[in-house]
Length: 282
Image (spheres, helix red, strand yellow):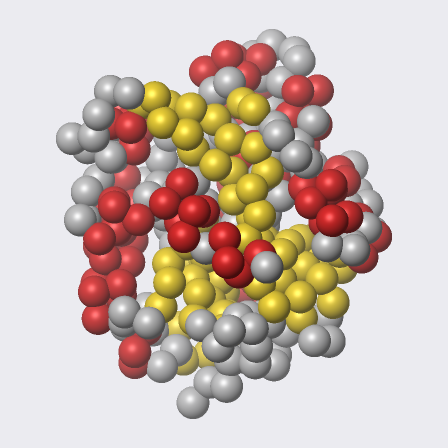
């Protein structure tokens, strides 16, 4: 039986972009809606302050200055708002206080702020890193990867989820059966949510309010997609590593949410989620 040692959780928003709703939710409206770039501050009793993703940051503009990367900026115009660094400072934290950045995957809207944390270690899914580390130019762009967003010493600072202790998850988390105990203390359980990219790190934990949370990155773009089991528009197949696996993962999340009502699933770009979890930031 897993203990799920508590960690303090704050959901943060580091910029946003706009797209028509129907792109991410089949049958949705044609109106442009806001897609926040959400990330999480996790304060661990022994490991200190960690981040799950970084959202957007000023580095995104430098990384998309040249061609063909500039197309990323044209297709996805972004608005930064209050930077992640400023939001951390409001909580009494500096960039040097962040010991670890957990990277769900390597798309630009999840790693644009890595340069802001020069003292942090990184944790990622190895299959995701292997899939992008050699990519440049058009190949990188097609995979949503902006090479300039990775610090030059990234390879020396990264470790991989797959090297940590594998554990059996309690039956209540079916159909997900196994996870990785990142720190060996049953506080943060990672497991792959493939399809959007090769693996994609989901993160399961219990927060300061004794609430179970599951960060799911881009395994779904909204709560509605999960609860109503609504897939995105066919055009998104161009963005996915494996459409069939994406659909399977979404079905699994739908099943999990249906029978585990006490668990909150947190997509990285869902305005409804952002609005409903504001109290966790108090």
